[in-house]
Figure 1 (cartoon, rainbow, N blue to C red):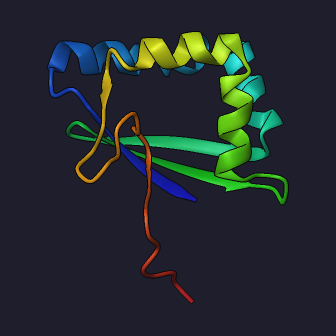
Figure 2 (cartoon, rainbow, N blue to C red):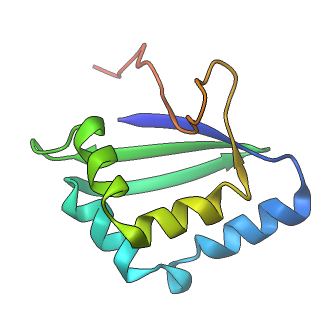
Length: 109
């Protein structure tokens, strides 16, 4: 699964956002919530101010289930509030939406 999100186009904010995502700054409670939702691996890439998230998920993962788990988790809610300092909705997003699922149009056979 692949998702896209935009960062606020400010070099200082982008640098700060990147620091939060260094391996040594990983928050165990956030990593646990990701894995508990059925996300097996996750990578985030940055191009300018656009983020691309690539995830491998197991059979238990659904975006809806992840959203419900996140709403019920106060640690994730604090993290999400912090991330709104940096992230903004990409074009085409609905109110309150940040990460949009990308449409796969090609896969090497």
